[in-house]
Image (cartoon, rainbow, N blue to C red; front, side):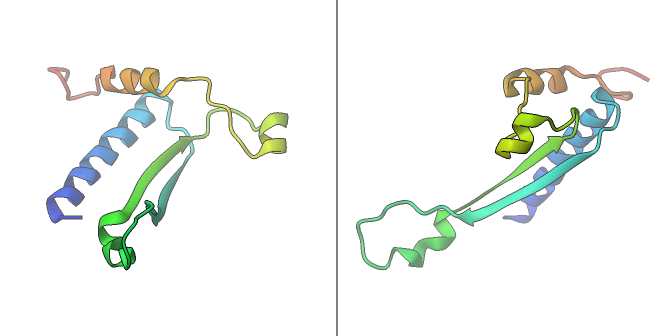
Length: 103
C-alpha cells in the first residue's frame, strides 16, 4: 500500500469503529484480516512472477451482537439477519457529536 492509502484505510476504519460504538452501544467485535494470494488461472509460464499484482486482502469486522446457537455451533457459520446494504446505510446516516453541525 502507498502511504496515502494507509492513511485512508486508517481513517475509514476509525469512522466505522466510532459508528459501531455509537450505534451498537460499544459491542465486542472481532477484526479479521484475510490474506491470501489471488490465484487467477493463467495460461502463460512463470505467472507466479506477478504475485504482487495478483495478491488480494480484505478486512472483516464482526460485531458480537447475539449468542451462538445450534446452527452456528453445528455448522461453523454465523447468521447475520441484517443485509450489508442496510447496515452500511444505517452507519452512514448516523450523526456523531461534532458532525453535521451538532455540538
